[in-house]
Image 1 (tube, chains in turn orange, green):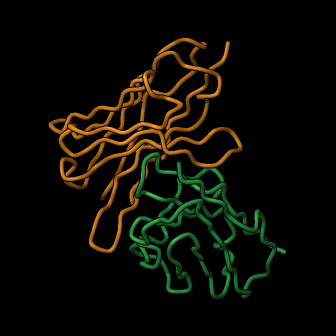
Image 2 (cartoon, helix red, strand yellow):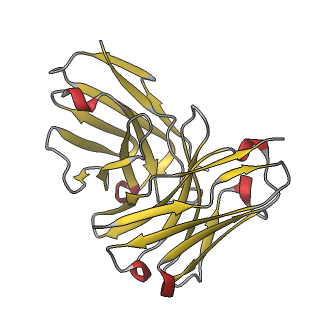
Length: 121
Length: 108
């Protein structure tokens, strides 16, 4: 079964740090771009970052540039999101997602169940 | 940044009715990179359509997508009880890869 499982969420004070992990199984992890997407309480979806198969290319939404770092370990079939200098507005559910790409198109086709991050004093 | 604007914000319909959801982009999006997702409360999003008109694995054929350039549409031909949810369009062509604000399809 193709599966993504996030972990590492929790409560942190503003200015603090947190590291999210995403464990992949059921597919060849090293063949896919991977993404992080977040959703604030009662809000819509926001793409956060993505990373190429070999980790050589990364993209971020402007609001997290310089604070968040996406990385991966293909030997461990794992994706990570290091979040520093956290702000209240970073609160939400963070999903990892697999990026499917074919001649017909590109989209995020497999999603984890989400990890909850709460930034509050 | 490409802004995606979905309309209407909420669609109130009865089971069996047809639902038409719109997604308008602030600049042209390649059809290859326009997707639609369904999200139910407490659940992760689920991919419905990619490449604007290709159904994802396991998605029933009552769901269809169309459009090009800046105007895209998701159509649900006959609403089933399990289709009442929030729907998001998404462009994965130009970073940052933006989502629309969502259309809620609710039971009338």
